[in-house]
Image (cartoon, rainbow, N blue to C red; front, side):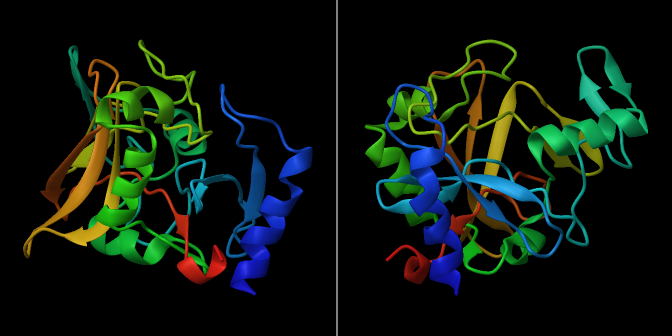
Amino acid sequence: MKKTLLMAALAAAAVGGAFGGGEQAVSTFTDKRDGKVYKIVEINGQVWFAENLNYAAEGSVCYGENGPVYGWRGNWYLSDAEVQANCAKYGRLYDWETAKQACPAGTHIPSDDEWTALTDYAGDLKTARWKLMSSTGWEINNGTDDYGFSALPGGNGYKGVFYNVGIYGSWWSATEYGADRAWCQYVSTLSYRWEKGTTGKTNLLSVRCVADKEAQK
């Protein structure tokens, strides 16, 4: 069933639209838990969500929900409409423990090795920055989105404050780095590399789901 759900959708890619300058085509996957429909794309044998997860798992939030956002003007609060618009555009933000359980059946948050397979396929971290970032939606320096991954800058959260929407994207991996930290991927509109690092497990990051291995065969 897991294989059928994901690969049958990819089989319909011939009627989908091409991304960027590459040959990958868009298809869709429906999360049966809430009916949300996500774009999916196959990249070098991996089947990825081409959007950030927006499943309202307990403990997840929209950017700006129940806390201030920080910018050069200081801290301020978003309206309910602005908060919901952030969820619709960027997906929700999750702490690490919540993220591990948030992806729908047949998918999971990628391990550090799975992220590395994606960025290595793009050539290196410098070229991955351009090829994986969406061609629209960043404040400056959009990517070329060659593979349809369409990374968007959903910002992040730390101790009840939200930062960097529009200029910074960060995504969890399933791989721990000690008791309190885990590996993550991130990129800034001002940087010229796709980056890999670690962050505290209680911080709030975006989630990209990838198909389980048996669903990709």
